[in-house]
Length: 281
Image (cartoon, rainbow, N blue to C red; front, side):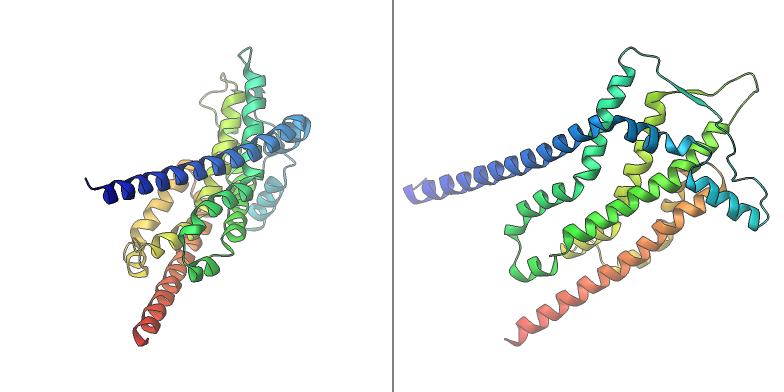
């Protein structure tokens, strides 16, 4: 290997190491933000557990009142009415409550600090983008954060109450009482909220997949029927096994899928305009 080639190799290695160092500091700052917010959430224990986490198990939760009123108006009687607590929550391990407190604080820290985590991610990838790509993606953090928080609220006010109402009142026999473990209950709430938040990021994911040429509007339209089946399967997994609950959950996801098609079409149109403009030069 010549001296010049050796210098180029060292330069490339240093550049790669610099990128790793840059990524490390972005991850450190994002993690630090989550830890700081989690620490604040740790001291807000009463509000997070009594109001937020245990709210969906109470009969006066807003979702139950709304669903009960709607069900009564369309003639479904009290099928969606939740009039009394159907179960108790218990902790059967010595460190169960403390462990739940720690992990719930971390989850709250991640959800609240999500916009800053996205900001650090964007700061890492933005230097590799062209000026026009950076300008068109300027609202990435705002839109992605907004979609995530809408998904979190959807998971908390729709998916979680539907799941708790069904699973909490389900009995195979009158001789079996529903006394759920604390970790099981929190796990259901956590999975419903975070899964919904991630699912609502679908338009953002489609945007970037279209930018790199992996997805096209034609591809999304062609496999729309398969997407419908997948959405229904996911709805059946994260919701109780009744048609009404599955429809309530699947409709917003299908709307997001249709929106993703228009976003993909918009990205392709902009890329075509750019290529035509460069060809004229």
